[in-house]
Image (cartoon, rainbow, N blue to C red; front, side, top):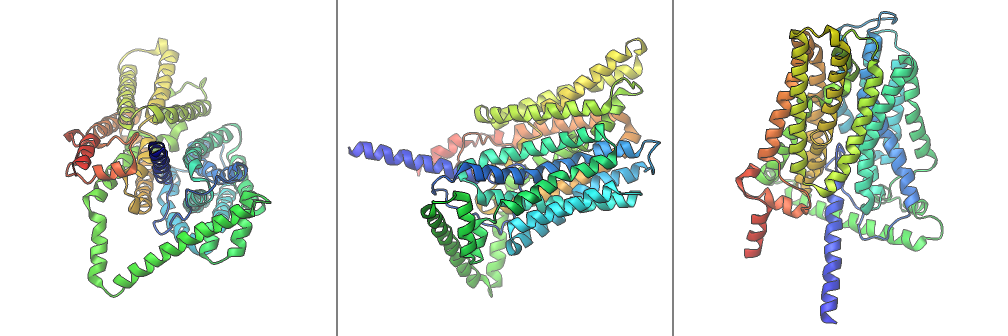
Length: 539
């Protein structure tokens, strides 16, 4: 009996550790920018909440990520339409680059605004505000009569993006059952790709003004959902001492007749908030008038166990700007047009839809691979395959220039298009998604929100700069030069994965943090988890 109880208790503890690790690991996954001052108050031990209200909530939240994806790839169809001769006004390459890049460059303002104000005003109201801003942006673009008005619409959308993404991620994190957060996190990524596919479809079939006007329907649906059905998060309401509203919010989550569960949730959340507030008061009292303590506290962020994963995650993500992810997303139709040349029998817009559909398929496959294969294996395989595709495409482009291929022009065009599709597939199944997934895995818990937000902010600015440079690269080096840059960047990124990226598959967050406490910087030096475990056992 004693052995039975010991085994049972150990199993329950292991299960609890895994659930805690999974919750923390995935709560800031792939693009979730959560400010460091927002603390998760939900206790993962509560009784599983009903599924239906959570599905409705995540659907409304995902509408924000859907719209984010639409804005991200809107220029892929907008710019070619604006450059057509029958348009009411035209724009040059520099104006086009500015319209494309400003969406990402301006978004950190939305991150900061959303992250700061959401603690004072509430998550629900901020999400609604973000969607209202998106609607203003879509209407501005749809009614634009000049380039300046379109640029203004893109600026408004960029700020709205920061608000919706930041606050939406926080809302989902506080509202949902911890055991479902990983699934919901992946659904946000899929929503972004679906948004890209949807805006490409609208831009292909409709006039660009009509496409922009229809695009705001996603925002309207989200606003209606939050106004009619979705309540404010109980955590925020309890923090603001609005217990009656918190009780009503939890009643809507649990449903009628579940007052016991509602009261238990209120007690747990209140207890955690009070505990964290007491710790914060003690910490502030110790450091309020002690300048040296403040300096020491700041220095704590520069420890190797924080700096190393931060820069590994940052550099890995910034490669997205060079091997083509950001540029292809913004200029997909134009790149396809350059590849097919003067062949009008291939519709660039249709091909862009096919490529986006392939990217969604690659993400679904990646979700399975992440469960059975290590991160390094996925990254290295994706990197090698991407480099091979880029090399083959460069070879075909060089052959087309130097050889007489007029008789086989249609065949060469199809070969280029198919290789480009394969290039996107091999890149997105690994290099395109791993940086977002591994940021939350590598960063220590106490700086995960701050570090992730800072990395995403830097990435957004640099991605805006990279897409702004696209016209200059094309004018100077052509399509072959562009893919030469992509291929070299993919090669360097693959080497970076091999040398520096740790293997996090199947590892608890505590193990990953312990790994970064070691003096080594490169993974290949041999100081892996096996040696960490040996050291722990010897203590």
